[in-house]
Picture 1 (tube, rainbow, N blue to C red):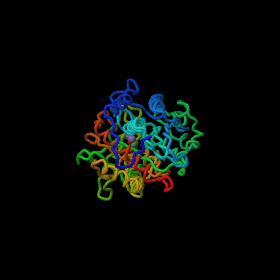
Picture 2 (cartoon, helix red, strand yellow; picture 1 turned 180 degrees about the vertical axis):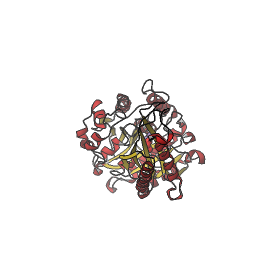
Picture 3 (cartoon, protein in one colour; picture 1 turned 120 degrees about the horizontal axis):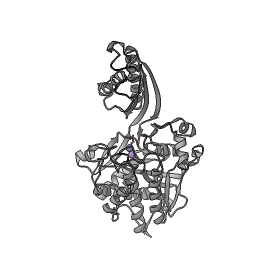
Picture 4 (cartoon, rainbow, N blue to C red; picture 1 turned 60 degrees about the horizontal axis):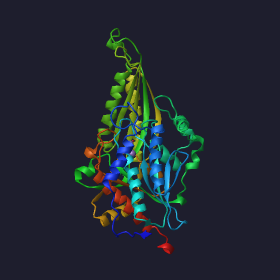
Length: 430
Ligand code: GLV
Ligand code: MN
Ligand code: MN
């Protein structure tokens, strides 16, 4: 065995191998689903991606298991069996028509780290668990980070029964369809005593790193997100026969709500709040029928938790009164809610000093997107490392990070884990 202390020759991640993994996962996409990658939460394709991760880690000699939530964990033993685990990982599911990097970058970085440790015969005192989380994206069921919420004890069976996709399939049914038992998810919960620290690598999904020419970001806080569905009901009728003044048009009211959301997010009281209506469904959905019912799916994100919830309340109040004025009815349903988090200073400092040791520039920045880190930080102190996103674009087929940038981030991840292994050892084993 080859003990590696911080400051010794760094492990160098291989860009070509990382790219091979990225390409192999990208090939696991729903056929006929349009451009980019579509590998939604709790589908057979997501499970195939977990099988790829399992095979890789098993071949490297790690102990691999899948928990009751569908998260896959691969453990490399430490030299001290009494110590809790260090961890690293991210997610393998995608939004519809995604790129190849969101979540996947962190999993392939974990896979490459496991290979580097195996090939260099690295010795560490703490066990290291590499994790591929299930169902991080909220695109299918509204709620994000289901796998990591479950391990953190933030989501249980009732929640899984109450959330559905656009086809009416509940989260619980989807889990059952790929072999998991939603009523048993409590078995997947992590105990704080079993974990020492966790690092997630992720693409930035914003343009700060690219625009400042910085290869690595260290996240200090992650935005919260509240998601609601607004249903506006008017009266479906003939587009030719119904004069303008006799309409109860749910679509025009919905359009006004979308603009209200935008103006709310842009006013000076909400600097930094982001409100988006990313999905709207009109019914009956015919060019010759006034929309009788329109549903809007609204996502409110903020790093200030009070402002996040107050903004939602204000939007609902004002949307309701504009619907009254337009003679259509209004209803709002909560879909999901996650609070912002501040990530622990200690892990940020460790990643920063790792970057300094490796002579890699970094900057500290907040995350606008949600991450598994946000959930597991409730159980285990967690650090989040960003690598650049080209043009800041994500949740799109054009999402891209170069293999070299990914390799730089992976080297930081690998060295960061070993730095934690050194720093967190109890004196007796130090
Ligand atoms: C996860 O991708 C999110 O919606 O922030
Ligand atoms: Mn992600
Ligand atoms: Mn995402």
